[in-house]
Length: 339
Image (cartoon, rainbow, N blue to C red; front, top):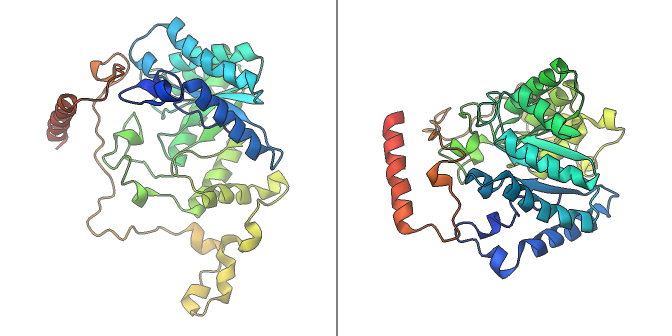
């Protein structure tokens, strides 16, 4: 059970009009997240992981000392609440992830580190394989990727990370938590570049059958920490658990409410629906969107903006109308270039 502390660093909680740091405090947010996670974990004798993620301060070119101090404030809460292990997740730059791992290892607890990168590597041009090597050398016990890309793309990236570790003769457990959206048209920065992000992604949602395939491929690749990120629903997670029921030794809760692979359709009134009561049918299914004017692929907003760019610099003040107008104009220019 992971604490809901994603983007809960002090600098993020006061960035661009966010009032949480001032009115509530990051310390209270992180403490409450730990308490809630532990309460739920105790219902099923589960572990609790405290998590940190990339910071506005790093993207604003702040120093290693300052960024590490931000991570350490969250770590202090995790140690106080005695979480079972730690996760440094959602990092676009391996350098910042290394800093996070250095801090997390001060606790003496196991540390997982995941980057939100694709097969092209991180935003600074470090390859996926080299990213994995650097994370393990920094002290990470588990390495992998999360978010930004779909299951198939994430597995390609983890495969490259695994190969990098093998070439360097290093060992670590592997982890993957992809999107539940199909993103074959993403650019290097992933789904946040898609014009549908974040409020029109639903037509891209993966099916439960896609998740069966993802879980099997992940397991066969040697990954043992298999989960999901944005877009995942309970039925997606259940599909993962059901696909790996033999390996895990039991079925997940809720499986008794349906038959595997749609075989319950044998009870259906319509004969053509009864004919779908088989795994072979659903494994080969290519769902339509039902959107007659919807393109198969989008044109990503590839602005090429990353650490150190002026538009990523942190500010406490709410984004002004003038700043928004500037972004709107940039969007028009980039759209014109793409077209």
